[in-house]
Length: 294
Image 1 (tube, rainbow, N blue to C red):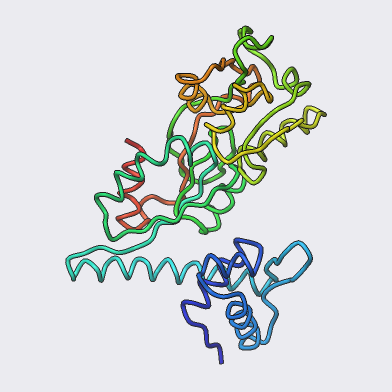
Image 2 (cartoon, rainbow, N blue to C red; image 1 turned 90 degrees about the vertical axis):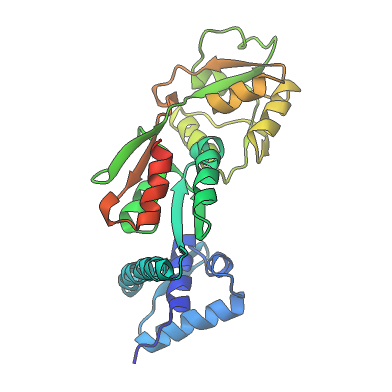
């Protein structure tokens, strides 16, 4: 007999999406030992392995992928049930799952998020940073309600709306030989020392991939967790940086740095909101989408 509860299903979804039982347990707010025991119990109940375990983490087996699809559907239904029942008690409750690239997450999401949460006190929003390519897959699979990503990425059959406009630029200390250029190409920058965001950030992974395609590694001298900290190291002449223009211009108001456009076609970063079906989303998720589109 199959005996799963909502905690089991939620844990399994987190484990698969994190690619790790340890990180999945953290997301589900469970101790590692308890999470491992729940996963083993699910496999024993089904009589089939749900995860392939390896040195790099875990991935779902065919049985695990089938269970994941049902788990996502059931958990989404529970969220809708919670919201509808809350209406009878004069409140609202629910959770929204958003995936966003670094650019959207840091530069453009905080304002609309604050506005939405202020008017929806019973709603929680879970936001995960991913690369734009990863975001398309997660939204298409139902792992997130919607995503915020680069407009240059093919979103397939997903519904999309324009979100914001921005682009990547070079940030250099004032007086640097590149600071006075009208524009520069990535290949011009890769000959120099660089500073950037933490290697786990979506922007860092994106730029490393672009450098690899150009046939040169990025000579990263330091990696930090915020745009402001990166710009301060640029001002101190530790290295150059490639950042979103909005973040660079904000830092340039107070720091001795210059902002130079990149000439590469991929540097334009129009951002897009993508989702599966707007009408199928719970009303509170549609409310958040409307706030973002404004």
